[in-house]
Image 1 (cartoon, rainbow, N blue to C red):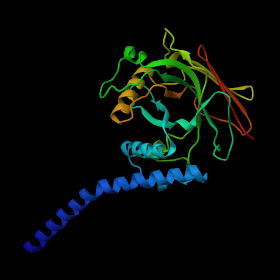
Image 2: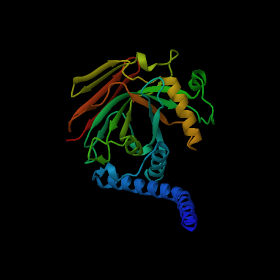
Image 3: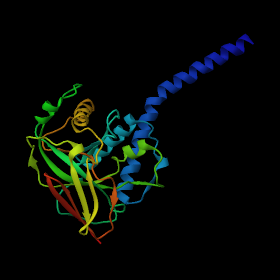
Image 4: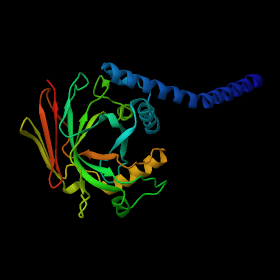
Length: 276
């Protein structure tokens, strides 16, 4: 009996050791597999069953984002959003190849969902690496030199929707398709606040959404979180990048062949067209 007890303890110790030794390797394998699956889905246009992604936390999802950007090209922008005060923001780097000027024409089979979000975007005016510091509003006003309206086109590589794993959606660059930005204007003396922004969205000339303060996030705390997050992630904000701050109008879907126009009152307009 005593011998059996000793053997059980030895077996348990060996099992724990194996788990501890293999866990980092398994996580790395999950990151590599999820990255390849998402890139394959992006390149082929064939949707990916979200249940195939072994992504179980934010750290793994962010690692999958980073691995994709190594293949998709340099970071041209960041998207960040929050459900409001007391909620942890979430973010994703966006490939420069997916950042477009107003008037862009989007064609091809990758535009299936054609989800639309009208957003406030800001331009990074200087490199920003705050380390572990949360910057104040005044410090952030020295980082961002311009604002502009933007339309984020929402497209997911995932199938079998709705996706019941939020980390899988996060790994999929938070369902990013394209970021279309309007003309930049210098940062106003009265810097914008999301709870005061009037946003409109029109499809083929018909108003599809109009909101005031439709984005629940607190702009400057969210930007402070992002600046620190990017620095700690080893990808600090760089001059010339854009940061888009979440939807002011919710999610609206458009049909193929439509003209999409959006405005942020006092900031400007932005437009895109989907091909037939």
